[in-house]
Amino acid sequence: MKIELVKTSSTVGESNYHFQFTPAYRRNIFENTRVRKLVRAYMLSKAEELNIIISALDFGRDHMHVFVANCKKYSVESIARRLKGFISYVMRKYHWDLFEDKLYGKKFWTEGYFYRSVGAITSDSVEYYTAHSQKKHWEIVDFEFYKANEQRTLSDFRSTGY
Image 1: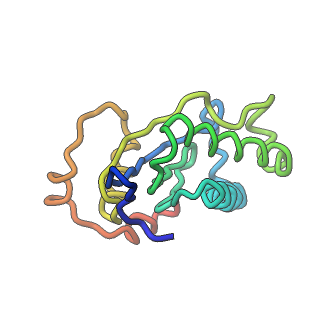
Image 2: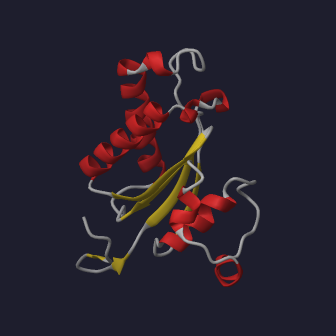
């Protein structure tokens, strides 16, 4: 699927979001490589079903970052609910043994999530938003300042293993 402006009879635009989802009790379940691979595969599968694009997906020890594009048909809440709900269901049903020592009950994710609307999703913007979302989400950040002063590549960021 190609990321492009979405055109209808009366509108033209793009709708891109950065989400951060956190496992229940902020447990470090994403230290497990198999859990990361399964969550990534299920996320991509559900996105394809919804006809939205996952343009980037990365993990911290106790959270994940997801950048979605071409999602004009869905509200922010609907995207988060559908992605988190599906992953929670399949991970608990088929892979409970991978994290049963860290989670309990019927929870996989925390109730809430972080989101931010973002412009065109580039490797620089993904790297920036992911790096800055390790801190408090309500801090004011300036992407143009970051771009001018801290130029790195996405592969540099991914080399950290998360």
